[in-house]
Image 1 (cartoon, rainbow, N blue to C red):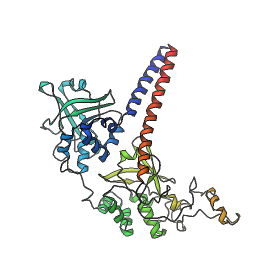
Image 2 (cartoon, helix red, strand yellow):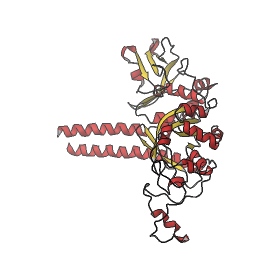
Image 3 (cartoon, rainbow, N blue to C red):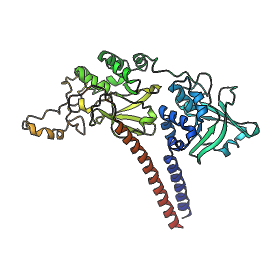
Image 4 (tube, helix red, strand yellow):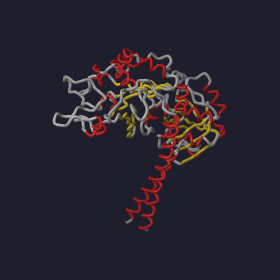
Length: 428
């Protein structure tokens, strides 16, 4: 009985901690403080807020509008993003912990360290108790000055989230040298990342110009690796019409900025550059832990790496070609070396024993299953290859859905905690 009580108590504490972590949203927290509006705005623009919200334990070092305006002048969004990542500590620090550091000093890791762009320990921050009761923050580079000092606490959720105001940003030589999308040769970048075949296709089809035109407003590109084009069972893309090839390549891009952390938060159908409305040529996301895959409705393709992240452009590599049902849903993928008809949007032909379809029977065609794909795709129209912007109303609906979803998760976990507490009380 005693062991059962201890187990229930431990479970209740764990669930309560999880509920607190899930309920936190850094931009919502800072919305109530006008003095941090510029910092909060850049959290959203750079999508660093999504990286913060995905962490169960984090400390945000926040800058006032005055300090933030000095930081962002003459910096690209990519450089601002790295500065914000360096101000995000992956441990919990409240005022009490800051003033009681073991030995008076501590080295802690940051979001910037997790990007893989940091050299050595440059993604770490040195926290030190200074004279006069002050606490300073500096780069891990030897000899760095303590530019930033702790000012006050803004928000504390013990052991999950701490939001602290600091006087100045933390910088070091080399922090602001992020690659820029404006100065990047997209095809050269893809070739270097092992996506030579994809690079050739977007150049020969002219789709590279569509990508470049979308970069100013926002672009997320999913580039299949060369191995993806050698995969067993991949349809013969050489038999696609020019219009269908353009639709396929535009299907590999979103008309918005979506780094990996932001992809994890996306729900429902996501419009691509090929989308024509009513869900046609949309993608969805399947996320499990740190793994993210793009789901076409026919197959899934894992996001393998990020080769460019320069707000508002990000380029990911994926380990398989994204096959839209609108192009490939009506016919099975041919076996390697086998002859196959060009993929068509119509459903697979019926067997000779079946009666010839009449115009009124078109709606029943989706019931004839393709041997290679389940579930069957609906009949598709001829793809419209013009890029389509996501409707503003849909974006607002998605934001509301995400917020309601986060609230629902928090309430569900809270209900579980209450249930555990009641069971524990009955045992006593």
